[in-house]
Length: 405
Image (cartoon, rainbow, N blue to C red; front, side, top):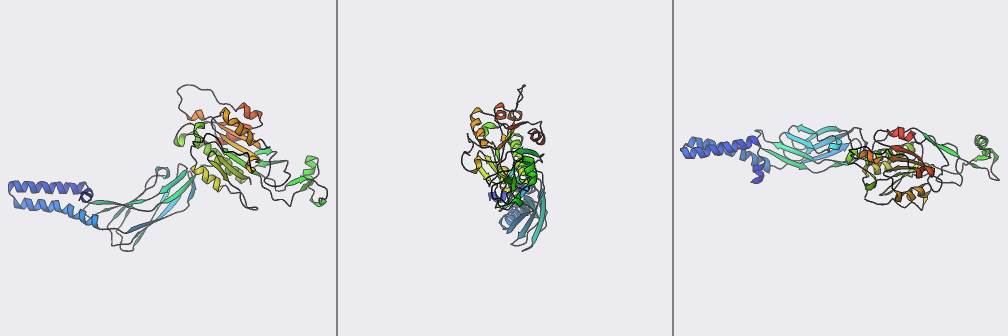
């Protein structure tokens, strides 16, 4: 009975109250016609509620987004197929559960559906925040023709959409002294933005003279040969310090979100330059290596950055063993600078890696009532050969990246 009364709309409740009032007045005044009319008015919404509530619906929903991975600011279209597997329905009011991060809940009015009839709907969503967002379930509201009863039903089923962080195009930087994933020798220099097509090494006794690379020989002054038997790939490691104690602010306006955008942009930039990239966060390591001969794939790294959050860890992962200890290029996206972290950062470039650091002025994302000291590149990083640039809310990422030259 409670469910039946709860299904009454404002109009239905008004009919019920008016009918009961008429019945009471008819009994007091001994007016049979008034009593009969009151009973009719009171019973009408109750009968309609019983009919709508007890009439089961067999609706099913299937969603097909145009993409299950989409970037912030891009538009994804979702096709919805609603099928009625039971008796005919009345007019349906449908509302899809879509989080505010994807643009809010769309609503539809669907005409009456007969048995096995299908209605096809479509809506678009433009995400504003990275992360894995659930689309669905769908809520259906049914009303009887007089508008006195409305029943709400939730149709099970949902679909997830992974929203990748924003990727900002970065200018090319030239680096030197990088290591590579295989081979005993390495090129003398290479660039982020263009990785050499020809790999050369020092001449060894017995090498075929036809393999001498004269341009490299003239540039270096040493006899160099093409290293044709080796398949190599430039390697880089991108470190995102996502520890809670190293960041300020909350939500989309936090320093972590700016750090994630920076890390994602660097990962995409290195991938476009044919680097194999590994991503290191306080939560662990994500490997972007692919099979030999295949181009680097940054998808696993961007997927990880899409869902990364503040970590409660107090230290970064141990990279003292394995290939992670000797990348060709190390790019650090740093939060607050703490003395206890300096040995870890020092070990990152301890085996010849070229170090680039984007140091976030995290206090710029905090609430301040007075003036504060402007952050400068940490001297200890500069002394160890790192190229350092400070990133704050007023500095664009390409400008900060260009400052690493």
